[in-house]
Image 1 (cartoon, rainbow, N blue to C red):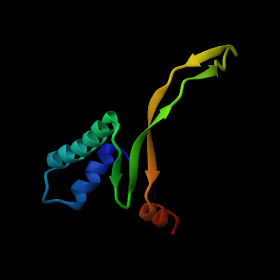
Image 2: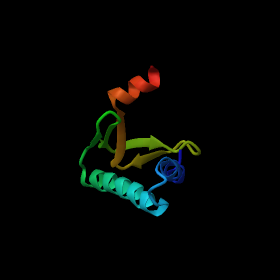
Image 3: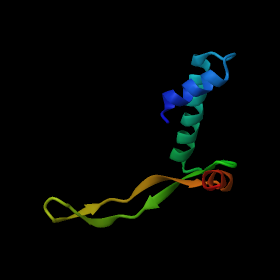
Image 4: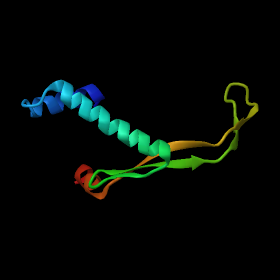
Length: 92
């Protein structure tokens, strides 16, 4: 599901709300999650899951085309851990 599909689905389920208001709401939620992750905070949505940032150490990689070794710098990557309720709904 894309962001626009989510907005459309929410608009269909809530005809009393304007589509533009729902779009602002969805964008605000995503922006706040992103801002928290940039700060290094953890975002937990009960029953859904938790977003966090993981540090990946620098390492020596290999260029698959030439086979030569290259240095890969350390970096931070987003990580999502699914919540128990969501996992049970998917598997149940």
